[in-house]
Image (cartoon, rainbow, N blue to C red; front, side, top):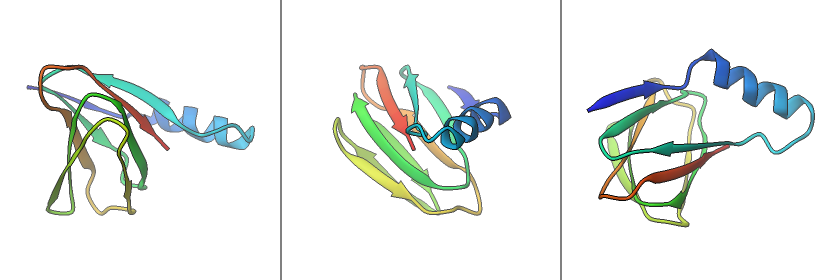
Length: 93
């Protein structure tokens, strides 16, 4: 299973977009067995297509297409992964 992390480049992108009063969101695609570490700052995660498993603060959640979850500011990074055989498309605010 591969693991990816949102690095400072993505953080800067979100910050730069926010200062121009655009919708500060990021869209990401994850393939089966890929795991993404989300920033600890919290925010909304919305599944555009596919199915997502999220783990944060010793809790797990499954999100289906069209569902979203508000993550609080976290002490440790949240994890998100694609479940099933479909590519997962996420929007992160």
